[in-house]
Length: 162
Image (cartoon, rainbow, N blue to C red):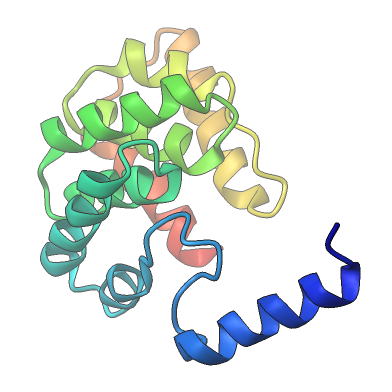
């Protein structure tokens, strides 16, 4: 039987041997380079790096959502919708998947689907975004003529101010 002390020292030894730059468990793929490209707003490179991560692990939630967000920022709304819909079906409570899936639908002028997706949107950290979404949902439900572009632009503006 292995003691807790031996287990702890064994993990510390593996960390030292690997240099600390890789996960000790060997589970998952390092997405640091893709995240760095995304932060730099190099969405094309980030999209391709997230694609590589997804080749190794198709169930990687963050990589799938971020890849969809990259497609969205590049104006590739069909691909964004496909990636985000896949993530949204697997993780319906994820606020980023919900937000950007709705935005992709709005950009494609599919406001019915956009509003349906946004019914479940909750992000208490970004109240301004929630308020903007709720205003547009109310306008849509009352029959106010809206275009997808104006809805998406209003929500994007709230995102940048948040």
